[in-house]
Every structure is written in structure tokens, then in C-alpha cells.
Image (cartoon, rainbow, N blue to C red; front, side):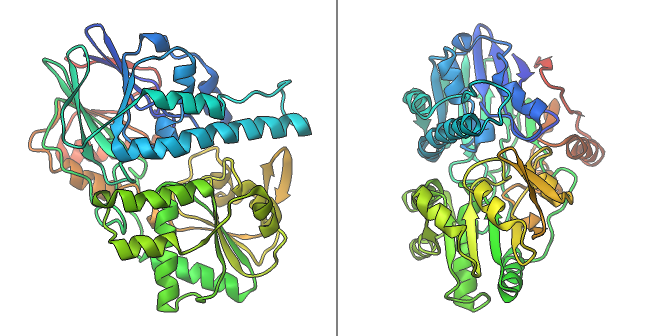
Length: 453
């Protein structure tokens, strides 16, 4: 067995691992690069292996940095099956066409306003191409071993990160390797903790928060305090949010805060993401995948007014009254939230609240880094609004939680590969695992290929 790292090295995006066993080529994850331009340009580069030669894809979960390259893979000649959990498939049915739609919108906007270096600007893939790719999905159940290609078999276990999120165990006749995917929290308000893996020959583990501990403070209390302070000065709270996972946690907290009187019960709250609304409805269909009961699911679904149309979205920007707007995307890289930032970022009464990790090179990272202006649609927008981050709203395990999960292995892997982290985070986790658990670890480079003897 061999493995090549086609993404999630030196960054938290672009997750792709090429596993070769005999004549079989398997991709574990198939994500888009996000953030710095030099990373995003990789989305346009050819893979080192022809897509038609890849036999199958196994997805850990539906976030676009793990699944968003699939339409391009199919467009380029892939004709195998895409295995994932049932909930991940349902989420990809929502996320991938929406991704194609946004890519088309961004290319169209660039062409209309002339702020692209390319003439014409083209989308990476279209909504129709994303919808075509869905035909190749093959959902599987957790805990059931299934044949992937040749001698390779796989099994999924819950990772606790978002609805349907999985760890993947791949095995051939001689070797086993576990991919953690994105590990969830031990005490997440919505998701159950990650399943414990007892062992594998090799391990690929994420390190998004590999150099940090989450704040012990209650994130719901911090969210309520931020909203209340902004409302008191007559401001608007803009929350860039991932449509899957983060938006649902925010809605759950908003419902609880209003019921507790911690924020005004009549405060208008808008969910400006029809996709996030569709995702929220899936929590009712997959009750066994999370902690919420039927009543809590219903309350979460009704915690905000859904903004469906573009005209409704534009109308929000004309309002000058206290309100909360939750809108995609989580790192302010695209989507409707950009138009809200253009409308509200220059007013010091307002707050831009980030509810999770911001990858280097994204607008979110720039704003948290103290930028006094942000570039949106080719223009610089003054940044005078308060910018805050509630890091412990993240759905990623922190360094202590990752180490606790690793400590549950009955036998250490022969080698552990630390991926899916910024360089400092990945190397910090490597040192800690080596020093605490005495495991052999490495932080792979982009396109590095290793043998798994």
C-alpha cells in the first residue's frame, strides 16, 4: 500500500489522500483548496493521477474542503463510486449544487464588473456539473465493512464533527490505515463524541487546533453577551457561518438565549442561507446522528427567519435596526455574507462575529488579524465594525481532545501522519504526540508519497 498527500498539508483545506493498493487507486476525501491564492490555484491544476484511473472515492464528510472537488473530478473523467455515510450523501446533494451555483455567480459578477484577469472568467464547475456528479454516490451505513476496489475494503465510524461525519478505516490483505477526518468535540452541544478506534497500522489525523485549547468559558454565554452588547449600541451582528454544523449550533443557542431572556425575545434573527435551512431540516431525518430530541430540533428549525430570495437578502442591507444575520460562508470567502459585510462593516456600532477557525488567506483571518479594510468584489471596504471570535464554538477537537482520542488506541500505529492544520498547529501536535505517547509521527509535505509497509 502507498499513500500520496494531495491536500490538507500546510493548510486546513483541500483534503485529498491517494491510496494505492495493487492496481487500485482510491481517493480518501476530495476537497477544494481555500484561502491563499496560491492554494486556490491548485484547484485548477491537474491531479498527479488521471481522474479516470481512480477507482473510487471515500468521503469523511460533506464540508467543501473535503467534498467540493468531486464535480471537477467527475467532469475530468472519474467514473467510479463515491462512498460516504447516508447523511453525508444528503448533505452533498445540497452543498455541491450550491457550490456550483456560487462559482457561476462569482464568475458572472467578475465578468459584469470587469475585476477578473481572465476574459471571460469561468467557474471551476457549474451547478449542472455538480448535480451530474451526484449520480456516482453510493451511501453506506456506519460500522458496515464494504468492498471499495480490488483488495481494498473500508468501514466508517462516527467522528462527531458534523451530521454524517466519519472516520475511514481502509484495509487490504496486509495493511490498515485510519483517516480521522475532522474530529468532533467530546462535549459538543449537538453531536456525540468521536467513536474510539482501537488501532491501525497507520493513522492520518487532523490538527486544525493542534496547538490550542478551546476556551473553557460557555460559548452560548459569550454569544449572548456579544449580541446583547451590540444590540445595546443599536448595531447589527453579522455571523459568517458554515451552512453545515455551525449554523445549526448557532440556531440552537439563539433559541435557548431567547427563552432564557439573555437576548431580547423579539430580536430579529435571520438565516440568510436557504441551503443552511435545508441542512437544518435534515437533523430531524437523522436523529440518531446527534444529541437533540424532537422538540429541540423543531425549536432550532424555527429560531430564525429564513431568507430565501436575493431580493430579501438585499432588503436586509437597507435595514438600520438591531438584528442578527447568520449567512454563509464561514470564513467569508464567498456567498451572501459578502454583501452584508459590504453594507455593515464600516459602521462601528456593528459586530462581525466569527464562530470558528479561520484559515490563513481568508477574509475571516484578515479581519481577525486587524485589517482596516477588506477587499470584496474588487473593492476595498473600510472595516470599522467590532470584529470578535468565539473560538470554542468550533466543531473541531482541540489539542487536548485530540490527544485524549489518540490515547484510546490499544496499540500505537507504526506511523502517524499529522495533516489538516496550519504549519505551527501540525508541528505542535506532532511534538506533543511524540513526547506524550512516544509514537512515531511526521508532518507530510504537499504531494509527498509514502510506502505503508
